[in-house]
Image (tube, rainbow, N blue to C red):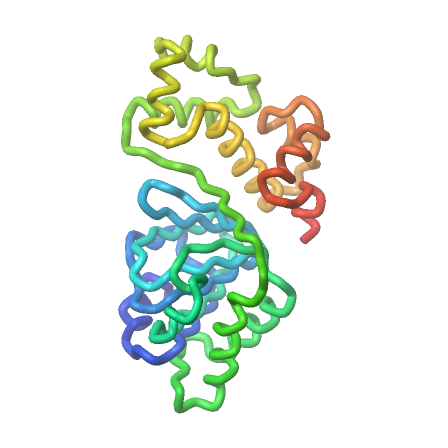
Length: 261
């Protein structure tokens, strides 16, 4: 049973933990749960869209989505395994962690605990089951992991003019793109373009361009075996060192370490 087919099942037992490990569908449309969702991305990359913001979740990272938060989930690589646990929510008031969206690098301890839960795949684990206390411990440990959230956010918009600019940028990332060039391409003044970016994406042209470049770099690192130097040039950087510095600022990891992990 795929995730889309399982959506009604997840919320059937209020006090349970529902476990699902699978190579997920490419796109799970807008939905929400009455439970908190913990998902670990094993290989590849996932994208969560909430209120015109797309959050990028690379491999070996996990995310927590609070109960009731509507979201779209997209898997960007066919080999991605999504290991998910949907937790009872009666004690979510115990810590602020459970009431906010978060994306975090996964520790070896958490990965092993999540992998162990695969033996209950496709099942509700309830307080009557012997295994329940293990899953309670897993949920309780999340706020104690002291992980820094990784907020890789790619804003989206339904503004048609902005969508055309975004498509152009994504198609020409290897080029030395500048605000002046884009203004000429779309017959706009720099002031008008600056206002358009702030009004629709809530960030500057340069911030958005860097974000698009970094997201594309993450995808290439995870999905291909291209050398890091080739990836740097493919996303518009002239030197490996400048790309590596920008990548570390963005992901808290060097590109080579990111691929190795």
